[in-house]
Image 1 (cartoon, one colour):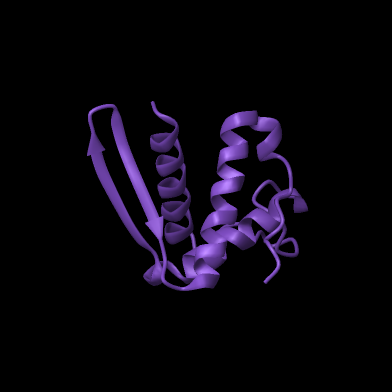
Image 2 (cartoon, rainbow, N blue to C red):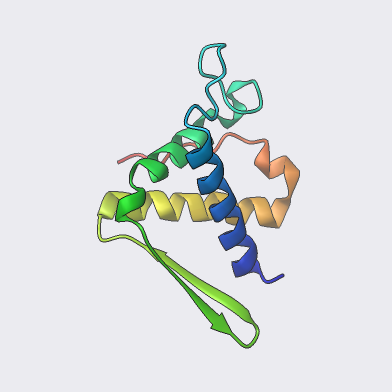
Length: 110
């Protein structure tokens, strides 16, 4: 599986999970992260913000001989900033595996 396909798959799975479970990451224990602690709270905030702006996100998936290419963009500069932050987190998770996923990745300042 190519790196782009991995990133596209992870993004799609996260967006589906958020869409199916509106309270995703908000256990009855003070709205802590999906792992039951605050380690993932910032990541969840980023995912929620992306989901809130889902109608402003354009996505193209192009078939290539060596796999697929995805282009995800927005005309809204704030949404573009969120997409870029999310791509950095996913890239780090792909490069560093599970230890990276356990880190708290803060939403970038405006």
